[in-house]
Length: 151
Image 1: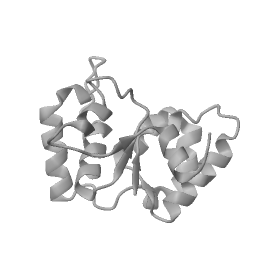
Image 2: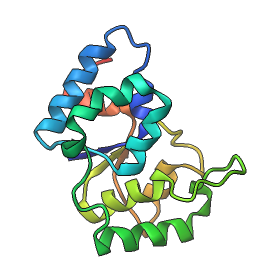
Image 3: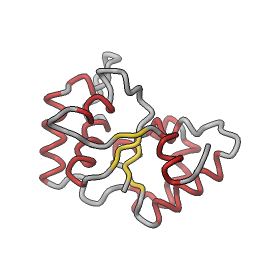
Image 4: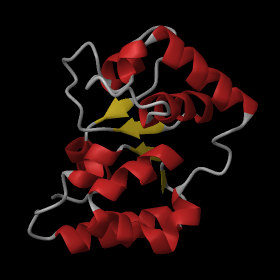
């Protein structure tokens, strides 16, 4: 089971066979293998043509229990412990996707997919590696290789 971040979808924009890859992602959504959190879906509004692709499967795309006490508590703890996950542009997004994505991965035991730099100490992969979190985190290309699709 996988949880995908906005950047892993946005990086498909402009790929020559983007429509075919998106169709494959929607198939994974349909069978329940690929999901995300509400905030990621909202972030896709910056790429309206990509968000539009997922609107027909939005209900299946979003995890059903995002606001369960376990996930909400974990997201709150992550937000408190790793404040840098909030928007660093100065506008400070009051409800960023990253803590929710990581918390859902932790509570549900799912893999997080993000194209954020693994070497950065201020990004999702760093938080996922922390002893208190330990969530499997892979890049978009690693995900596509793992499921047998190459972009």
